[in-house]
Image 1 (tube, rainbow, N blue to C red):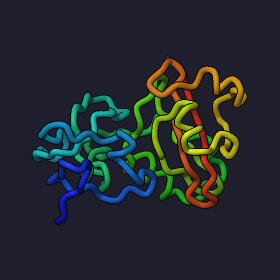
Image 2: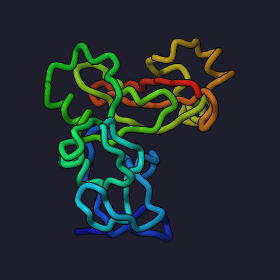
Image 3: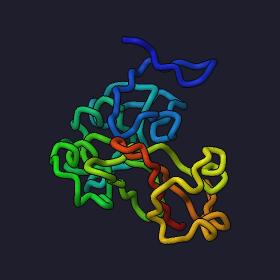
Image 4: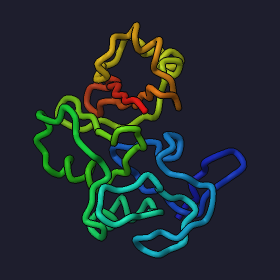
Length: 184
């Protein structure tokens, strides 16, 4: 096992499996690496963990990447990591749906996380964004907008860590960015 480098001055002992729909789990701030905790599912100590929650009856504080990736956490707690799926009518492979719901950690949102689909598969979660992040990425015109707001309105209100939060996804098939947002 190789340690995963997360910063120039820090490595982790916990190996992060590859998530199809979450290409950069630490950079996108889905997993944390600030302490050593005990995974509620496997009861192992880990230094990379998920605190975003699971839609289940039982409260869960920490989950390790492996328990999420293999589906053990969703099975143990009879839950899912996404509240809902958006634009998934063209997703015909049930395995894709199971993977995004039960084996992909969810992002933290104000009103409940909704995972985006595009073409015939679900999108990869890129990260939390405001308008300034979209400008930095150079994609203020090249994205599918699922926010209900015009680009002009978004430029005035969409702020990372603000009251109008953006969630950026990217289609795994065509590469188009997909933007979703919600309010506090």
